[in-house]
Amino acid sequence: MRKHIPNILTMLRFILVPFFIYAAFVSDSESAAMLSLIIFMLAAFTDYLDGTLARKWDVISDFGKIMDPLADKLLVLSALSAISFQQPFKLGWIVFFIILIREVGITLLREIYHKKGIVVPAGNLGKVKTFMQMVGLIFALGVNAFIAEISQGLIIGVRIWFWLVVVITLVSGFGYIRVLILPGGKSES
Image 1 (cartoon, rainbow, N blue to C red):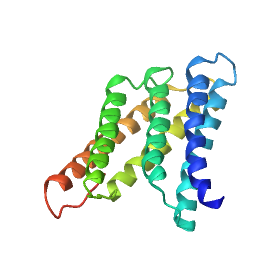
Image 2 (image 1 turned 30 degrees about the vertical axis):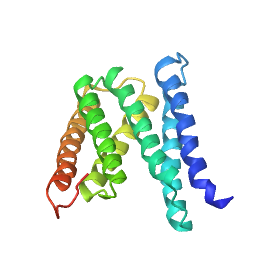
Image 3 (image 1 turned 120 degrees about the vertical axis):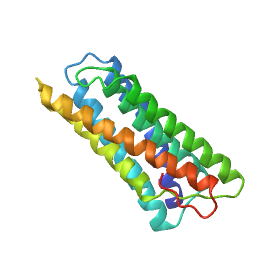
Image 4 (image 1 turned 45 degrees about the vertical axis):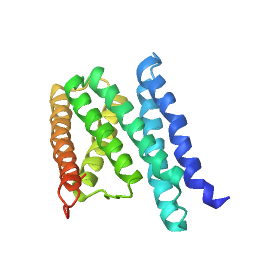
């Protein structure tokens, strides 16, 4: 049973994404912002937990290798769309689509190269990118949940943060592409 727990957590993350989308985009309840924050944080915790348990118990599976990153991307892109296209932050379509294209493109490239037997692990810059995305999303969702009247300074701060995320996202994506083109290169995705 234990060997299935990481994959169950990954599936739980898939299940939580539509609930997050409902809370963030559809619900008109006064608690919708708080609910979307709680769902996002719960789903993010399942990501941390499934990876930790899979490594600790040495139960890495092909299902997990494919579905875990997909669940992560769906979760992050759902939350990013919530703060990109809605008030109060309204980051805009450029931020969302740059990150979307990079995430989908690199995920597809990884899969193509994985099928060819080439494994390019994530580099440090990619880990920084993921950390910055998660911190920014939790902060923005938290501000929206806890602060009734969000100051223009906070809105500008979140927008600046995500433009920094865009820069790191692009640089890490180019680093990943470089390692696929140049033999002996090191991935930064």
